[in-house]
Image 1 (cartoon, helix red, strand yellow):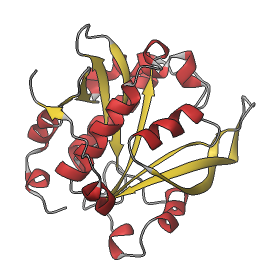
Image 2: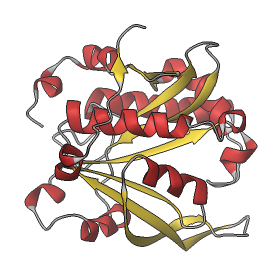
Image 3: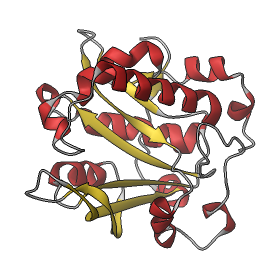
Image 4: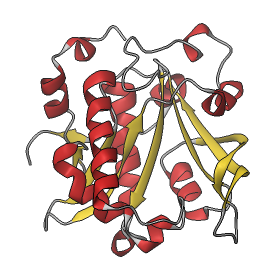
Length: 238
C-alpha cells in the first residue's frame, strides 16, 4: 500500500483512525479497550451469531491485544463504537484485512480476476493478510439494535476503506439466516455476490459446524466512486 497514510508511524495512524459519525465515536480497538470489547462480546444477542460462548475477561483481553497488533502492523482493524452523547459502549465494527488462507480464499471468485486480489500485505504479523481488499462487519449490544447504528458503522468503514486506505474492494460475510445484517449490507450499498461455506452456527442449532452457509456481499472501488450520493464519515473532534 503506497499511500501517505501507510507510511505514517503506527501510533499516529491509530490516533487519526478515530472516526465520528452523527451519533457514534469510533475508537481503534486495542488493549485499552479490552473491557469494552468484553461487554460487546458478552451480550446474549451477539453471542448467538458467533460461537454462543461468553468470553472470559482474559479471552477478551487477548482479542483486544490482537486487534491492537493488527492496527500497528496492518494499519487497520475494528473500532469500538461509543455513543457520542452518553459515552456508553454501543458495539464494535469496521474493517480488517482478511487472512490469506483457504477459508477466505473462497471469496476470490467474487472479486475481479486481477493480480491485486491475491497480493499479500507487507507485514506477516500478526498474520499473513490480503493487501488490497478488506472485510467489514459490525456487532451491536442489544439495546442499540433497530436504530441505524450498524449502518453508521458500516458507512464509516466504507469511507475509511476507499478514501483513506485506497481499497480496491470491501467484502462482508454473515450467516445466511442473519436477515438483519444482510439488510445493513444492502442499506450501505453493498451487493450480494453469492455464498461460501465455513465454520459457524447453523440455523436453529447451538452447535458449530464446518459447512454452514454464509452470504457474501461485495463493494468494488469503481462502484463506490460511481455511487451518488457518496457517503462520508467525519473524523477528529466534535
